[in-house]
Image (cartoon, rainbow, N blue to C red):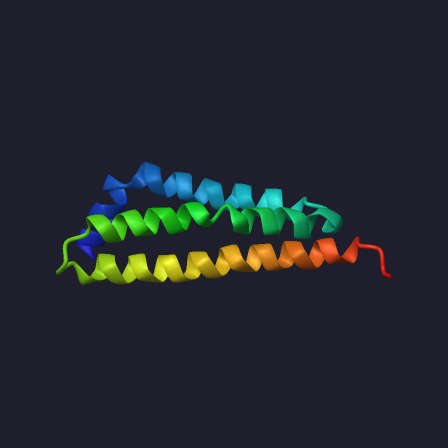
Length: 102
């Protein structure tokens, strides 16, 4: 229990920033009109390509016996790829709605 409290006091600023980011994200997303929700979310998903690049860098720099870093990097690559592909699929479906029917 003491180690947890020590970690919290050492990382207090970071914890405050994460809490503020959560509240700010909820406020920003909550105020987006439903008409803009799909284009904004598909664009945000496409930005997750940065997550894929970061995960590849982490996996490349990790020691070969550091299994937690390798596993987390692999999961980040898989989940980031799914998010990017999903963002493009949603964008494609959204754009298909605006095409004229023949």
